[in-house]
Figure 1 (cartoon, rainbow, N blue to C red):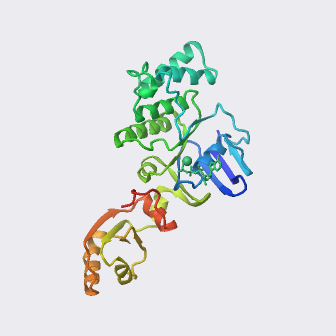
Figure 2 (cartoon, rainbow, N blue to C red):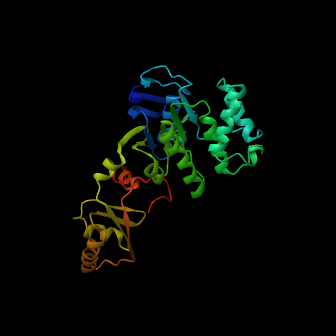
Length: 309
Ligand SMILES: Nc1ncnc2c1ncn2[C@@H]1O[C@H](COP(=O)(O)OP(=O)(O)OP(=O)(O)O)[C@@H](O)[C@H]1O
Ligand SMILES: [Mg+2]
């Protein structure tokens, strides 16, 4: 079996004449890994997934999936950004229908559907109309439908957007289980840094159709100092000037973020310096560096409003 699940080289997609959705994108996904594609709205994540699953054609470049340049529908599974669940069918009916699309029938189909209902904890609700499911249940059903044919490579476009924390962590467990127990390769898109942090082996950030940074979580964080000190002050620009000597430092939403190696030790020193220059500080918080900080330091953008610290 090839160790590379996806090999994309210089792939491009333009909608109409003007909208360059994906620009010369090259990336590789290792077999058996969980790969997270992150980026703000409109950065080209869904378009990338749609090209990889041949839902839209690419304008140029090469795509190889498990070494083949033809995409075999039986090898891949896809859970789209918008739910593919038929609201007028029950959970079970949705799964049966999906199985039939992939050519499953009889006892094999029945057995597979029961297995999935169990795995996704939907047994109790299998005969309810899925329009009455909660968001989390619907997403689980979507995921179950996406893997009915046991694909080797699964695409998940924003699998947990809009779900409450409990439903999200439930889905995370299921996604991990697919990787660990069934050896599935998973490519997911997300706006949630915690999601990438929790699940992914490898992370790639997109911005305006291009890849801006990529690497393992560890390698991305390695380039950063371990702590962030966040100062709230009525004179945030002045505070920035005073601490300019500190290397990684940035103002975000009227707060000054300073990357330091050891926040607890560094804090008194910085506060002293600010005080000497007459800068008032309202509050200080200390947080551990996360992938959001990595993205922010590279692009000056946050991934999602309200997500920033
Ligand atoms: N069918 C389409 N026709 C025209 N333009 C499109 C189409 N689909 C996407 N686009 C444009 O392509 C760009 C990339 O969109 P895409 O949906 O890939 O982004 P995304 O990263 O998935 O965003 P989001 O986080 O909001 O889901 C955007 O400018 C979008 O408006
Ligand atoms: Mg999208």
